[in-house]
Length: 258
Image (tube, rainbow, N blue to C red; front, side):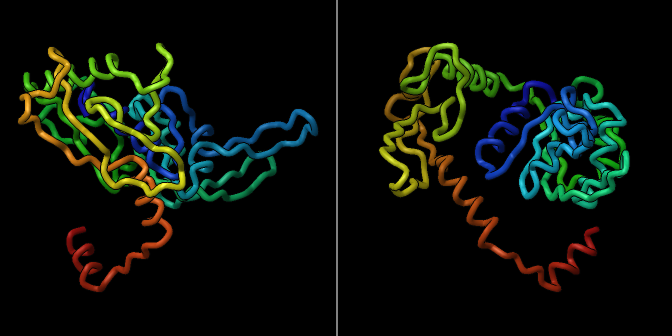
């Protein structure tokens, strides 16, 4: 997607709600860092395996930001992970196969800096077809030049810097663990872990950049937003309790669509 379209924020949100998630970047990771490496133990001097991001995130999610900044050799290393869900190591007398049953969520920028609508998606992305075919879903995030939308984004950014959570030290990074900070003011009065998890966030109202009050006076729009704690429990329940059944009609439809 285009720059400044909150792709990294989407990855951060997944990191906060997923039961198991590991974050990495295309520039700061290598092929062995994503899969596995053979290192020498300092105490015994023996060669041992050191798990990479995809192996550590087994049955979880790996979030890779700046995916287009990775070198071609490093991107080839995750081909097996995305196709076979395993990592095979055969080096220095060590031959083994490690489980890497993880979902890969990657964010990348277009080749030309901004998405060109006159070109095909494969030409804009600039990644080989052998790698793109391993992704189940491909989302194109465009930066539409809308003054009203840009104004809401600027209000959102300024609100983050104006309103801090209670007890938060000035200058420290804000982590989105329990409540949704950012564009909404929330009344988070949680008194303990044992109480029932609310489905929706309590008391959400939009804050105006200029006046500091709700936009539109008494007619301000109210939004029902799922709470982060509820989303975490919902995903965990679905992963552990829900067992989908693929019917013959669905299998036939998938085969015909493919």
